[in-house]
Length: 169
Image 1 (cartoon, rainbow, N blue to C red):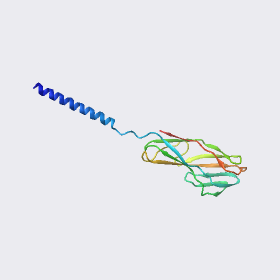
Image 2: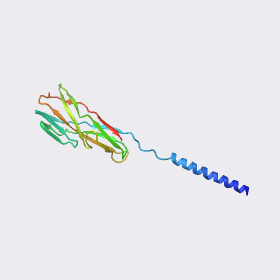
Image 3: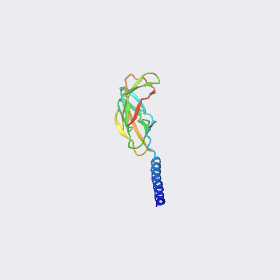
Image 4: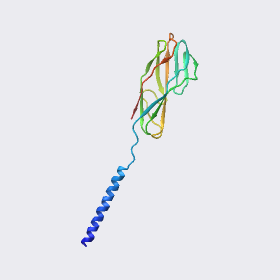
């Protein structure tokens, strides 16, 4: 009878050890959590095309690529494009966008033009939005802007950049 109890005790130890081992193994074998790393790639700059100043005014490119002018004559709307950023972050995560109200663009022949940034297709400065689909999907963010052109603007090619910050929640 003692021999039977010892075998039962050994069997109980084996079952207990196997259960604990399988439990620990299943904890270790859980899939990794989705990445919390955000990747942002600017894929298209904002472009106002070619235009002529007619007493000063503005030319605006919406985030959908539409063009509106006041006091400026747009000559080539084919090249007009909003800025586009591609964002990669796992589904269900939120992003807040922040950007300055405006920046100055420098002309190739001197002079400056003010670029008023926004809105974006996801809202204005400080807007919060969720990214699309799964971790391998890219969420596009289109950004429009308005160029303020004074009556005495110097003809030339104007270039510059604007900071935009993407913060994940």
